[in-house]
Length: 141
Image 1 (tube, one colour):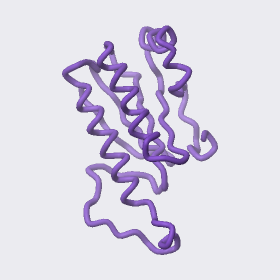
Image 2 (tube, one colour):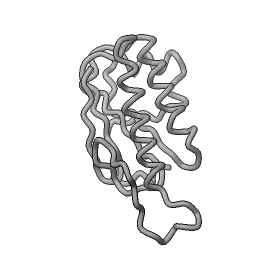
Image 3 (cartoon, one colour):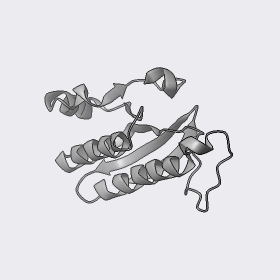
């Protein structure tokens, strides 16, 4: 699997290409972890709310200026997903939610087979699925 990352209107979009399975799930976990960590490093502490942020380590990819991760997994080019892949999607959701307060994960453009898997497993009740990218993640929360 190949993942490309880009900021887009307040979102960090991870484009997934290929197959999400046992062999590739750690790649997704690593990328989501990098987004969550980089966002946490950029978020101001309560006493530093008005001060500019200084980070000794910049992320491997650009991030929008948000205090909370607003992550999109663009699944349009994901051609296969097995149970390990579903587990990785759940793990991505947990990584983002674990950071607390208003964080968002959006699954964009899942192919019909994956959308059906999300429905029959009940994951569609927990994971936000969309056919288009909302312009502002703050309005989506």
